Length: 153
Image 1 (cartoon, rainbow, N blue to C red):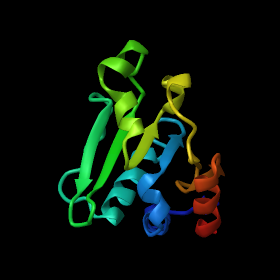
Image 2: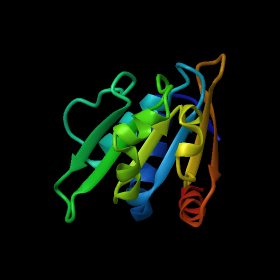
Image 3: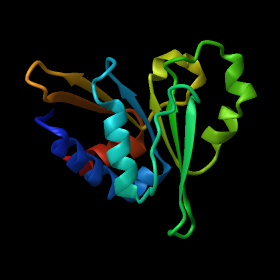
Image 4: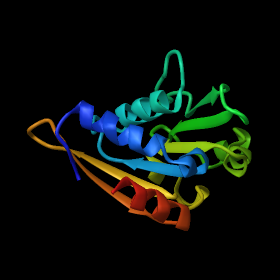
C-alpha cells in the first residue's frame, strides 16, 4: 500500500487499533532511519488511548504504556532494538517475561534482537519515497496476524 502523507499513517493506525486482536499482537516495524516507524507507533498508541508524552525507546530499549480506562487495562510495550547489541540484555531486562505476558508488543529494529524474539503476528515494512510518501508492506506471520491483515484490507 502507499501512504501519501502522515494522515494516511494515522488512518492505518486507527484501523489497526480498532481490531480487538491488536491488543494481544506482536508487531515488528522495519525500515531505514526516518522511514516513519516511530510515527506509526505514536499514531497507533494515540488511537488505542495512550495519553501523555510518547517517547521513542531508542536509548531505553523499551517504553511501557498502560491504557487503564479498559477492563482489563491494556498493557503496551514499545521496543526499539536499534542500540541492542548484547543478547544477555534480553534476560537481564526481563524481556522474556514481557513477551510471555498479555498485551501489545511493538518492536522497531527487530533484526537486532534476532532469534530472541518470538514470531511476529504482523511485520510492517515502511519505505520512504522521494515524494515524501511511504510505501508500506504488511506481512502476516501467524493466524492472529492473518486475521488482522484481512481486516485491514
